Amino acid sequence: MDLLKDSEVLDRLGPLLSAEAAAEAAGAGMEAADLEQAVWVRLLEAAPAPAEPARWLRRAVRAEARRARRRARREVPYGSRPGNAGAAPEEAALHGEEHRALRSAVARLPGRCPELMRALLSPRDLTYREIAGELGISQGSLGPVRSRCLGCLRRMLASEVGAPGLRGRER
Image (cartoon, rainbow, N blue to C red; front, side, top):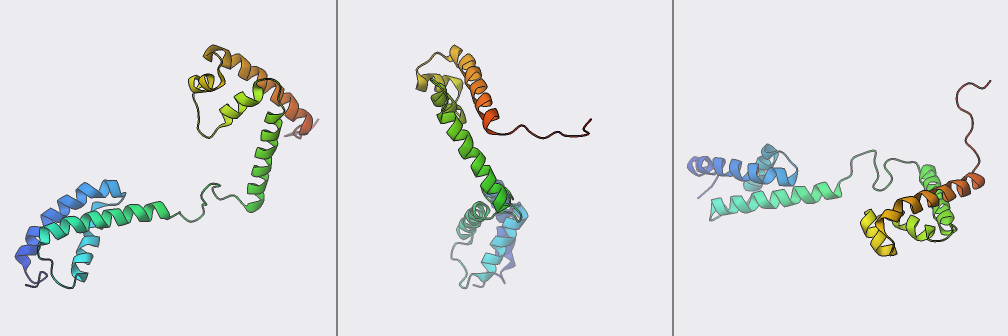
């Protein structure tokens, strides 16, 4: 039986395909109509007609949705790069140098400041409760210690980095 010539089967599969595509499209990050079209193309390309068209259709919709999810994870829009969105290599190098200078200054801070500042700068984005637990200090004392440490860090960086130039009109 040629599936494409059997209009009764196609009429029966149309609503099923629409329903399946609508259910899977949102999770795949694509329009239901695009998903439907991809499955119809897949059906046209299928050399032998599937023995169980409804079952084949459900599997094809899910397979196309998986393919769309994978493609969305791999593709990066033009004009942006992962990590440093669109920055020139010079800007990326300067940004890296600033991070190294900051980490170096944090390491030279007095007392518990290096530990606290490393926890605050951590990519894990810890809460005050988690930081207090890791450092073994009370959560209420984190704010004042943080203020003291930031003051030390500002003074340290101000002496190492020149003051910014004047902006606007000079008198």
